Length: 224
Image (cartoon, rainbow, N blue to C red):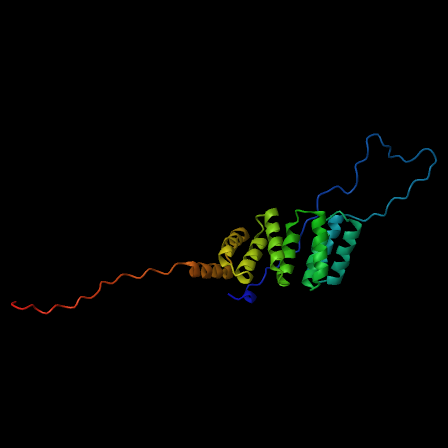
């Protein structure tokens, strides 16, 4: 099967922000009534809004195909809430889908530096490396995604494609195709056909049925 016929699946946009505290806890005994010694109160930092709500709003812009506005919203999130991996991951996806490969890889690196367990970012890195024909790095990225999340259907699918169409190791692709089918909860007809093709090529040829040799009739001997 030609590599060009095995297209990569597109990841859905949703990625939840990390559940970490935005503000430090107030120390016990600290007064909230303000200073009483006449000192000047430090100005409060500007309210940056709810990061979860802003993140969802950015994804809604994306769904409406407002790409420039989405990019701006995600960039603003990375500045206002630099502790979160999600905006960087989705910014990387946006760059990848608009063929800005270097920016995408940089964004995914930032996402991973903030959350080493971000299997989505690793999976997208693998796709970018595969497109650049950097197969060792693609393999390493997919493998890391599956170490983090063995139930990632897309990572299994992409690793199977890498083995089958690019590394020419279809037998190593088989278990990942099967895992993809199981985890995705659907019977992908293309994948079923690829699995059947690999299995057919690997099946041993049927042993020939032995045929008894023909014996020529002997002429009657003298005196018979």
